[in-house]
Structures are given as structure tokens and as C-alpha cells.
Image: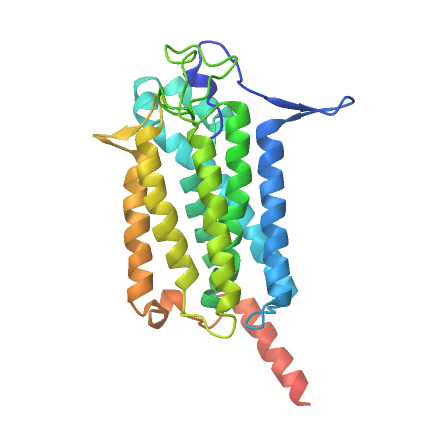
Length: 296
């Protein structure tokens, strides 16, 4: 989640808010987010070119990435707005500031990306299994860079701690805990995402000639969902969620459960999770015309 101006009495970004190139200053959070997207794109293109089970049409890979990026950005912002609903109900004037200048929530981006990905796959009659297993490897790698941006900005910080890994942010939000050593929960996520990416990439090429449908989606959801549920107990954000669990912990429970479902069930038998006829009528006509032309 990007630093939230509404939680600060003063807008005091922490640690290293900007990357100074001398002639240009770049916002650290968005710079790391863009790098994360670029790394993810590079991983997808590399694996698509070199893995024997894939080599999917480049045009579909590129357009699917564009759909997913739009879904990630929209979903991440809308989920941020969702977390503010109680405060917006109390003060409706907060709606526009939250919508236009609020932060980003990772799980919202993940959900938005999945939805837009399915829209494209179903619209053009592609195989969701192959594209899902190919694209999911980019998520933990790109997410790791995003969390570095969180650390540089000072958002998504942890609770106070006396442990050796505690971090004191040099200039933080006006908050009672700002001058105390805090759990670097952002860096915990960086480390776990890198580990998860390495494990998944190793399995991706170790079993290069056979994959169980949706196995990498399931591994990611179970692995990250479990870690995120635990890591949330160390978070120190002011807005946390419902009852004893944060919003992200509730989502994590569903993420893990769905990952288990994909791992043990034959999800590929369900229409939503298997290749079907294109939903786009114009694209179906295009394929029919192409088939007729090929026969002539």
C-alpha cells in the first residue's frame, strides 16, 4: 500500500522518498513499482520464449499483459477506497481525495489483474491454464520491488519492536510510534517474495515437460497467502480491518482456501478454468473467415 496522506498530520515521507539523479528527482515508490512491472514483463517474455511447454503467441502475451496492468492499477486503488468506506460514510467529503490521491492495496491489484486477465482470455478463447502458469511467476518478483518502494516511502510499516531487526525511520508520520524501532514488515515481504519466486522458478524448469494444471497458481496463493496472514500481525498501520483480523488477513484466508482448491480439485474441468470458444463475436467471425481462407 502506498503511503496514505490521510493518516498523516503532516505529509512527511520517510526514509528515501525520492531518488535523486542530480538533474532529476524520481518518486521512489512509483519508480520501484515501474521497475517491478518491467521485471515481471521480462520474466514472462523470457519464460515464454525458453520454456518448451509455452511459446505462446507474442501478440496475445503482450495484450494480456496490458489488460492485467490496467486491472492491477484499478483494483489496487479501488481496494484502497474500500478500506476507507467506514470513514467515508462518516465524512463523505473524503471520497474524492481517497479515490484520486489515495494509496494502492496489493490484494486489490491482484484481484483486478486476475479479473482483467480472465476477461481477455475468455474474450479471445485462449487457454487460461497455460497463461496463468506462465504469468504467475512474475508476481512475486515484481511484488518484491514494490515492497522496496514501500520501505523507501515508509508506508506499510510494522509495530514497535526491541528485536535486532527493528528499523527507526529518520522522519516519519506524526504518530506515537514514529520514533521507535519498528518491524520492517516491508522487507519481510521483499525477502519472502524473492524466496517464493526462486522456489517457483526452480520447479517451473525442473518439471519443464509436465505441469499439473494451475499448480503454480496454487503454490503462489497458498505460499503468499499464508505468509501475508502471519506478517499482518506485525503491521502497525492505523487502519487494519474488521474485528480481530485486518482486511488483508480476511482476504488471505480466501486466497489460501482457493489455492488449496486449485491444488486438489480438477479445476480445469470447470468452464471458467478451461479453454472455451471466444466470447467476442467479431473475433469468432475473424477466425471463421481465416479458416475459410486457409482452406482455399
